Length: 157
Image (cartoon, rainbow, N blue to C red; front, side, top):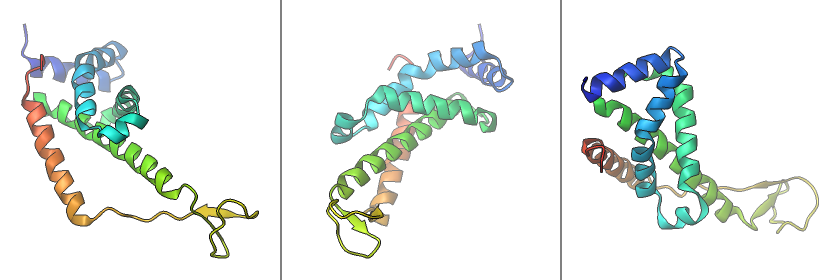
């Protein structure tokens, strides 16, 4: 029986060559771990708007599209990569829902005045970036630490 790195590496290499069974085995092997990561990273407010299964599905769709560029160096490489892809999906969902919330009722006409949605003509949404650089750096550092800790967990956890 081979060690986990050899099994995962074999599956990754076969999946990169188009082996559907190997890809299915990878998804089955890492699905629950990635789902736990997604559930741990989704905040309470975002959890009300987004289903963690949807984030999981988008994460694996992205992984399949980018699998050719993935290089596995150790057993934890794959789960760290999948965790980063999941984090990007969570961030995209948070950005989308945050922008929708910010922009509700804040239509702006091309002439510059607020329309409140009543004025006919071309309108666009005015979005502002409220993310502070220091907070973004702190969040990224926290994300790296969480991913490192999760990568060290045994499969049963």
